[in-house]
Length: 427
Image (cartoon, rainbow, N blue to C red):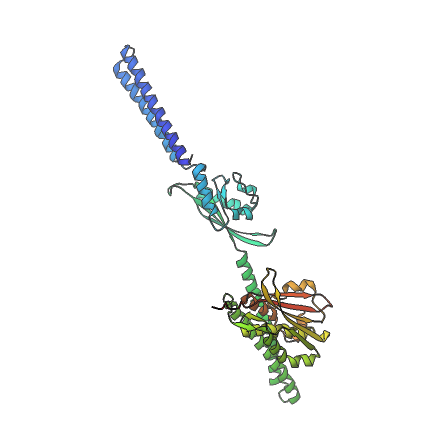
């Protein structure tokens, strides 16, 4: 039976009891009058007093029913509350005024597995600030907000909104309290990433800018008439300016790719001529480093993609192999059609060098912006620290992925995986 039904039944019983008292009083006073034991006037007065007392007792009970009491949900009311809580998109817990759990959804249960219906919420949530907020909401009838941080099992941030719910707007205390949890972790991590990105970008630009300013001041001062120093300084200044230009170009490219990340390219592109074009363009670098580039490719390997972005992927991967794996004197590039883990055809392009390799602890972070295994070596090679981040974001837009296999002393293999173009069905 619902709460409303229970209270209606109690009220009906109370009225029946009141009527019985009045009828019994009427019978008693009438009998006393008939036998002459009580004057009629006294009998009427006594009857009126008893009847009034019975009516007042019933009304007093009604007034008590109207007072706000801790809600107890059962029957249809229980089912309705559970259904409402279960349908909410965020983790939600419904509590009575004493802090006992009335209902919770699966998201709340996953967030706090110790929560149990009918038990105090303090048994499962050991955050004093949150328990205090629940107490204030129940006592004061006002919304409370609490932001807290969890370290176990992972670093996570949450905002909890504690909302008192009243059946009657004029009530002084709520009937139940709803707790809604909002996961702030993605927002906090984005804020941290943005702060790190701005700091790293500023640092990368500040270094060549400081070098340019220093050489300009030198040329304006002591080296004003020194032709040999002027020529050497201008060469260094030109290289620093190019470094800044590469960094700005990479930043703009990254921003543009992220802006269009939701738009998957739909143009059929053959990867084989793109890779050959990149190798031809890097022939001078390979010759200067004494590296031989070998290509093993099928006749064609077609994917849906953006030609210029795919060109950028292979420029970064092959140039990195020539620069950082030059000690091996060889780079092997393999293009083939293979099957993905979910049994779908995909294009695989591997760039393998035979250089010093990469330690395992660096592999998960190689595609982070500005992350470098060796900062000095990277800057000496003209790297911006954004090459592999660009590769990752371009592949994300193409619904592809990058895998890296490397070990110290065993070289490194960078492999891109791209879904192949689905051939058109003839009509």
